[in-house]
Image 1 (cartoon, rainbow, N blue to C red):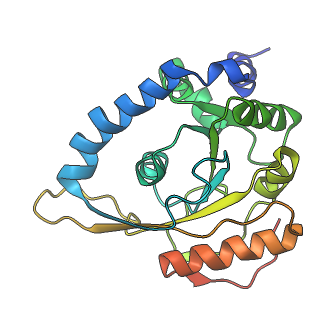
Image 2 (image 1 turned 90 degrees about the horizontal axis):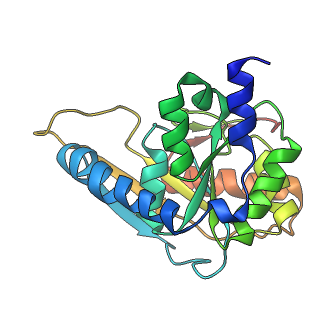
Amino acid sequence: MTEKKLSHRNYTKKVAGDFNILTWLYQIYALRVLFIPFIATPFYKFKLSGNRDALKNTPCILASNHVSYFDPFIVSWAVRRKMAYMAKKELFEESNYIATNISRLGAFAVNREKLEVSTIKTAKEVFKAGWNLCIFPQGGIRKNKTIETVNKGFVVLAKMTKADILPIGISGMEKYNWNIFKKPTIQVKVGNPISYTLEDDEIIENWRKQVAELTGYKLADVENS
């Protein structure tokens, strides 16, 4: 068995006990000590709005569009909740340093090509711990300002865990900025909850329409996978 496969296996499965106070403190540290003072504040202006308190007392799936590597921090900043993150398995295979630190942040490895049993089990452990789960249904970073194909996996997870979905739209971060004298405004808007009891296609279309409206992006007419 290769080292890459071994790392992927180790970071795929997590239990409720892994989502603890130490993970929460590490998230706070990464957000307030690193991201906000060194990235967010110097180079960007943020405008947060929408239904940010929806499902606040009920663990849910926070489903955002994906425009940058900063999105997990942005979602955390917007809703301020304990969260686990689904991250592509390739990130955990790049280096032990990256794998260790994103795991400490509450991330676990997933296969973007298919929904595996280990992913479902870990998602259930997240909610068992009383945490929320952050997912990017588009399956990867999309900077074309269009809401196109959506991976159906987040719907399956919602139904398997009986967790409602809270859509989040991020816009303005399509290009990274390192100019402290010209700060673009990043819009982060939270939509309305989507019940996991709806039909699969209805959930997907509801999410796509809400995120398109929240971001001002074009809504493409496509079939979902």
